[in-house]
Structures are given as C-alpha cells and as structure tokens.
Length: 130
Image (tube, rainbow, N blue to C red; front, side, top):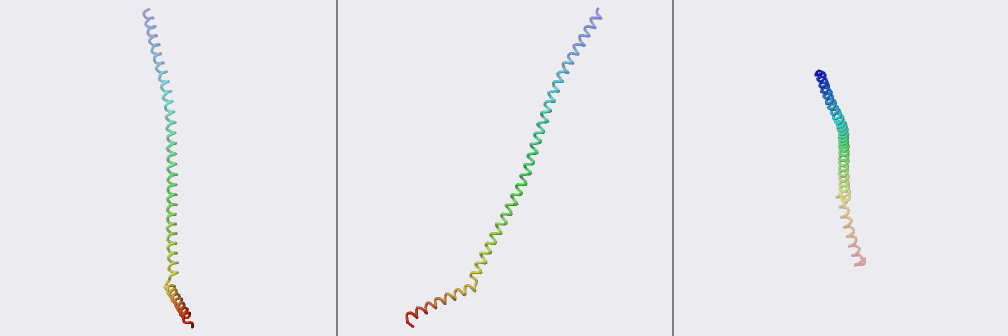
C-alpha cells in the first residue's frame, strides 16, 4: 500500500505540476496575444507617422518651389520696373534736350526780339502817323 500511495502522491504531484505548467503557459499565451496587439498598434502608429513625415517633406518641397518661383517673379518685376523707369528718364531727357537745344533757344530769342521790334515799330508808326 505504501507503494500505491507513493504512486498516487507522485501522480498527484505530477498532475499538480502539469496544471501549474498549463496555467503558466495559458498566462504566457494571453501575454503574447497582448504583446502582439500592442505591436500591431505600434506598427500602425509608425506607419501613420511615416506618412505624416512624408506629407511634411512633400509640403516642404512644394514650399521651396513656391518661394523660388515667387523670388524669380519679384526679381523679374523689379528688373522690368527699373528698365521702365530708366527708359522714361531717358525719354524725358531726350525730349527736354530736343525741345530746348541751343539752336531752338537761339531761334526763340530771335523771334522774341523780332516780335518786340515789330511791336515797337508798330507803336512808333501809330504814334507818328507815318
């Protein structure tokens, strides 16, 4: 009987041990399922962040193109405005120089003197009656 009890007790311990191992394995399985769920969520978050970083990079590239295009347009506008102002200045100078060249000034003075002379002659003639 002692041998039977020993074997029953040994069987009990083996069964108890097997139950503990099975319980621990079940606990580990649940733990692994939780870890896998967290890893899946982490992978989704990493993917979302990667997409956001890509959008930021695309936005930056578009902003750089916009800044370059705007700078080129501003530079062209400034150059065009400077050219237009210079052309207007030259045109005014040329018109001014042409209007009152030395020959034009001399003719204007001679005509003014002739008009004054004619006026004096006219007044003298009127007053003297001749």
